[in-house]
Picture 1 (cartoon, rainbow, N blue to C red):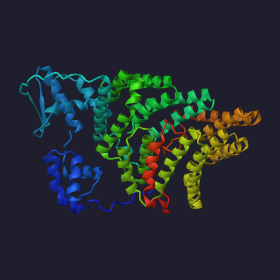
Picture 2 (cartoon, helix red, strand yellow; picture 1 turned 45 degrees about the vertical axis):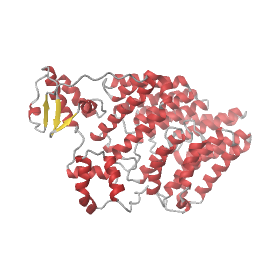
Picture 3 (cartoon, rainbow, N blue to C red; picture 1 turned 60 degrees about the vertical axis):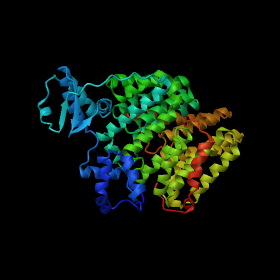
Picture 4 (cartoon, rainbow, N blue to C red; picture 1 turned 30 degrees about the horizontal axis):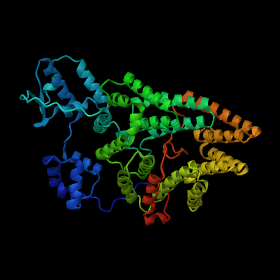
Length: 541
């Protein structure tokens, strides 16, 4: 996908120079947050810039409102030495007082390099290092006595857990962003979260295989996902925690015991592989207070809070169009599953629609939203309604030029899945057989014989043949599955990683979590309200 269309009203270099004193006064002098500064400049001065633009300018101007990781470590080093001498400490950086709670947050951030430095301090002697005395802009003093605080009544656990989890995750995101832990990922022009997409895709596929009667293969794939989780835990991408949370919900939706098993596995693995003060361990310790039911109850609150924190820290709209469409799909997926409020979804997708205007990308996202509507109708046995929606999507694909239609073969493939299921439910064995074989042929053409997409389609067709008393066809396609699965497992064992990287979140044909018609229709209406969607444009997906 190509780069996004530039905004017509972005601030120019001259505008940045003109408003620099005012921006500096708001952000640094009046201690406004970046979000508040951005809003004031837009509303009162017509000055439009993204969060990333502001951060780039602040770096150029030498504005450092946040504590640097190296300063936090140095303060902790000096505090540790003073504490062993019985001295309390208040820290100042260039004359600015740093409260103890802000310093403590650094100890709970996930950036590996920062955590290692804090651990190293704990192992050192109480004598300050030579480097400590050379840091002239850091000063520690003994604080004045403070009056005792009145003890406040404790909130019930069910209210405390989501609040505390959100605070921990906020610090985790801020610390990772500041330490540059995700800079390499965010600077790429491909998928913004390829590891999370791939891992979640394989996990969902394991459940599909089990559903089609391939229980052994499904649990084998699930076990591979659990093994891969270890490597992702040590090097998480920005969406790792959301993928973890969603995995619990997905597994619990299929089988409550599977969801509880994954909570136990992930929390115990984090306890073994990460320091006790790591944010993942702190979050899991709170989730265990409420268990699976509490996690399910607070899912929407935590999903939206996490993404909102990401939005505050670094924005949610990447500059390249491919990543923007992927983020858009994730928002559609989470909103339709009841994980995000419409107000938040509309805010992000609205900004995205404006940036993607006169582009086929928004048309594509509209079709993906419609696909979810077709899946919902299918689950509700509203077969005619499901068929109507799928035919609309296929007509849209066919309206494109022949050279461009192949860009949407994955969407055509998913539509064939729905048509196959419709004909199966209608009891039209001949039409279901024809559609099912077309589905397998298309998967072979797009993905090849060893891809999970193809294996999933073959297992579904074999299950159909068995249920419809066609043992000969079932045997033939089962042999095809067994042969491809053997090669797939050989590839997995040889590479010790997933054989295929899933760089797009929309490949999987299943709606993974239960969805309602209202949020799906809200997304469809949001895209259809834009008249430019009907205009044929160049394809960049």
